[in-house]
Amino acid sequence: MTDRALAVVRAGALTTVQDRGRPGHAHLGVPRSGALDAPAAALVNRLVGNPPGAAVLETTLTGCTLRPRCAVTVAVGGAPCPVAVDGRPVPWAAPVRVRAGAVLDVGAADSGVRSYVAVSGGVLVEPVLGSRSTDLLSGLGPPPLADGTVLPLGRPGGRHARVDLAPQPAPPAELVLRVTPGPRADWFTPEAVRAFTSRAYRVSSASNRIGLRVDGPALERARPGELPSEGTVLGAVQVPPDGMPVVFLADHPTTGGYPVIGVVRTPDLPAAAQAVPGTPVHFMAVRRR
Image (cartoon, helix red, strand yellow):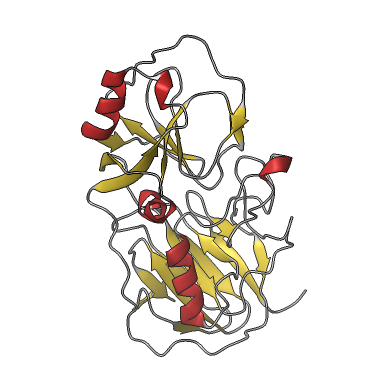
């Protein structure tokens, strides 16, 4: 077995391999997938000298613990968290050299939800449809990490960044999502449409990589029945029969029969990936571009 590998000592609540995803396969029923906070994943790759599309690890709330079998440079970004090597604190959001056999501990998030761990050379699991991303909906890509998993690593291709700390956006205290109305806003009463963009919601603990769920005013429909299934896109705000909006994230289904009241602008979605349960959410209507 190659010595360029990373052993998982503690997998944490949910740690997956992610890269830029596999866009362009929706016609086959394959979701986009990929890192939910794409700017954070690209930044940690840059810090260790990887290309922006190299595969990283995405942790959820509780972090993970890793043991490289070779000397590597690592960087942890996204949700702020404590980072330690062999029990000694090391910088977050900066490149850190880790010797072979040392224990890298990525702690629980101090704020936010998802931290990203880049390793020099990138995680080299077998790609599926051009991506190494774990897709929780379709099951494509490697399964979520488990204790004892061993991940192959690529060869470093560049020098790590020379920085003490790379600035990153703080996880949102309040989430403002710009949303273009439609295509099925006419399936809701005028009062519901107004409530959607004027009333406050809160992030639900039922949120996951498939969708950001919210609690708040239920949106009443103006039409009975259901739509035939139709295509859905990243950021679509689908409203199931309970009236609670769901913002589709990276692992969302490619079709759905519930009406879509609006679509969130893509640049707003990384902040949604870091919004902890209970975070206030406001949907702000914007015109089509």
